Image (cartoon, rainbow, N blue to C red; front, side, top):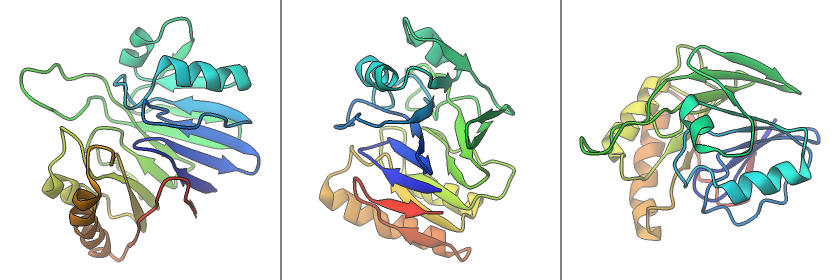
Length: 210
């Protein structure tokens, strides 16, 4: 299974010629991804999905199924979203998708807390969306958040320490400058290595085989 990092929060998982797209948000520059069997949207914020990106993916892949929490279904117009929640397991093509968590991390008490689900792909890759939900299973590869209005780097480090992945790479990085990433990457690397994991600093378009 190959995992490719795109801009900000977008990930593309590939098994052979079959692709799974996670969170095609507004910072994504390329959406010409073919042979997509499923799209997972962790929550409704624009940096994790846009109508234009989702429509383009589905135009090229009309049989693809979109999964997301109830808040995503309410936000998406004209496209069928299969609602998933904590504890659900879905089989789609070569992918087993297990979902964890219910809510977005708190940004501020004045901002409503929306629905959010994390997804574990093929019992290997875990991406929690905008949350620190720790799954009650072993995680091989963690897509670890590095920046955002809801994120404090110490909490992100604690999240990695709790998950104990065998390997990790950073995601959700668009709010950070180049200098900000250079400051934060060593913190996430340290947290990954405390339990014997390996940290990978993937740039846009780079992949890891897991």
